[in-house]
Length: 348
Ligand code: FUC
Image 1 (cartoon, rainbow, N blue to C red):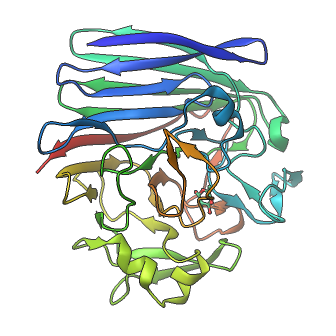
Image 2 (cartoon, rainbow, N blue to C red):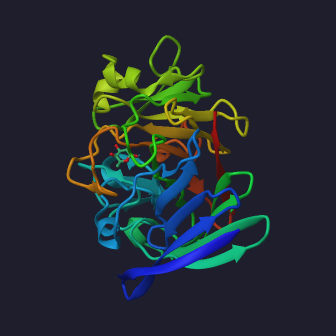
């Protein structure tokens, strides 16, 4: 097991490195200490070709722009907060309105545009990179000084784990995720419309035109949101269901996970034979099929376009602070936050 490190630039007077974790089977995962951005995941297809299966950019400047949040850890709160405002303990907090009148993915800099501290651990069994960042009281409008850690671990069982930790000195909100776009075709040869996806979820959240949860859970039965036996992404792109239309033709929806750590999410690309299994203790997963990816970005030499990648954002339910019927994302003073998502790569 191995970790390489390469200097790629500087932000806020701090050096930014690209780290590459390698396992004994030739799988490589690269990431930056800027936003914890995952820049590449190199895995084999069914013919033994090693190719990149995530959307990423060529240079640091592109990550400093990154309007699609490619690869990064988003926080403190993933997804949207209605009217960029919330009340906690009788006090109202105002956040950046960076998505119309609403707040998105932790704000302007959030976790995704800051340089994280790094420790690495390289053993025979696994390679671990530990990122830490302390978000100060009032940063991006959120209360409490929040000390966070995110670890990326790769092992020889072809498993990649993301652990998220947090602790605050004052009650706050915390619901981080990772915003990697997967494309199992390899080196973005095709878009993700022909990928098939299985999600063990019997309910998803209804969204408004602004992609805010209405508060209503919808039964997936007899809809293109029923992924329990697997279905192609294209069905949702072509669907006339108003929820797919609202999302910009496709999916941008939170699904409630019915089970955990039993292959509850499986993405498959028939052509390359690649499988990605995602398992997590998170309440749900936001499936975003890249409906709104603009056409002006350079993705490792390929011009970006809608549906070029899809995100499986394991997390608590969005805007839970405004929906008492959702599991809470409030982190209490001195409470230890910990959550984990595991990605397993295989072919078949
Ligand atoms: C996703 C979506 C959004 C958005 C963004 C880049 O998680 O929920 O609609 O376009 O990320």
